[in-house]
Figure 1: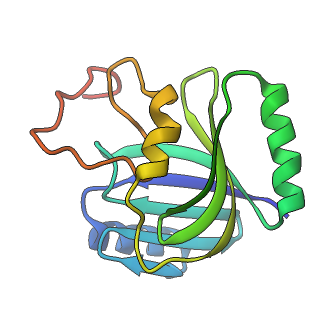
Figure 2 (figure 1 turned 180 degrees about the vertical axis):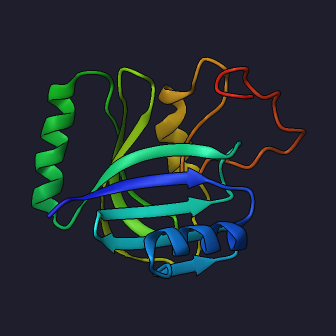
Length: 164
């Protein structure tokens, strides 16, 4: 059975854990200093937050599967959807070991398809994510990936889009 995946970049993990725990009526299944995840059954979603994004907001969406067979099915759908599929393969990201691929939808939203194969004691160094996401770099030059590197200098100026 497949599960929707939503990953949101946040500025403050404890504050966001409190908010989302109240909203979902459930505590997260994973809590780290830079990451938290809820595996909800109603609605069936893998909802994750992290401080790894370059700016707060929607980082990416995805489809998580429970078997290699389901992953093959979803990969077939990706190829039919059109656009460039970036096959990342085996990786460590978000304190998990996974097999994954990426594609952008027509609106430019990154979609991750993945099968989690185990846990990891580290978030991941982002190496595979950066390589996979290079093709999906947005027009404003920002990457939007789960394990994108943290900016070393001052963050880029905020986009006028969707800002008050």
